[in-house]
Image (tube, rainbow, N blue to C red):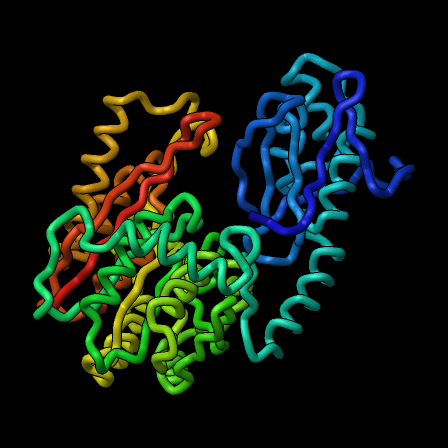
Length: 441
């Protein structure tokens, strides 16, 4: 949940758009080639238009969101940097059978540029400033506190205890004997409101089966923003309303030096990414005053995901994960792996024509569980292959962090499914599925 306000592209007389800039010199903008940045897009309910396309900046440069009504989607979809505003107006007019003038296209581009959603001088200037501030900060702020979870410490502790941990104690799957040592954990990264029970199963189990020696938590998260490199480290403490988790700087430096690429090239992606933030929040809570440090790693693995190829053939990714393994071996029982990773994203919110019916939901659960079974058996490549084959339709955003965790954990470790859940959107029936797995040596 964003704490900043949203902008909207509003209609008048069928097609039109409001702009913060007011009057535009259309002769100057006629030849512009607007280019939408890589941003998150989801369909959300809207009282006026039924549904609108919501744009969110997962990179953390634009503070707000933009809502695009259906009739303007064909315009914004052509903001690829390849067409001029005039060419877009002609193409859209031909496609929808309604005249669209260049002013409409230009004003839409202006709104998106003002909101920093277009690639151009305004965005680049803003990005340089944000990157500079983040680079010089000693800590990474709790950017989702007060939105995705409570910000007041006493209320937050009470919520985490009663609504999460209390409902997750023991799990709803096989319970590991207490003489087993947990070495790795897969947890949801959906917001703690909707994922309360799943987080409860994950972190109640971790708290129960954690070695007394454990003091270093290597946390893999999904990067919802595009990445240039396969992984991104962050050498900062992570703030939470319950206190800051300090970084294990020696471990982070060792991984960075051995990785063979600039492991900080995408560090800015950590600024607003929630997949690690939520894990750190629960870790800080269950650990209490116990000394502990984190190694925050965003997993992208963009090229293998795009090609659906074998990630072990990516030399840079392999070298990075070997560096993580070396840290794990050096720390012994002190090192615990965590992956903040959701599973499927299906339904109208994610671009599907309709929500899943009951039989389709059962099939989704079966497929998710088959994927998770590969992970539980320590079969990292089997997990990757099973998920990659329907990645375009199941949209498992936890592919890279779960694969990475299984790839680097102790080879003798095996996982147990603690919880599986499909969170269903009350408005349109869209589903985010997520799971909790504990891995034991």
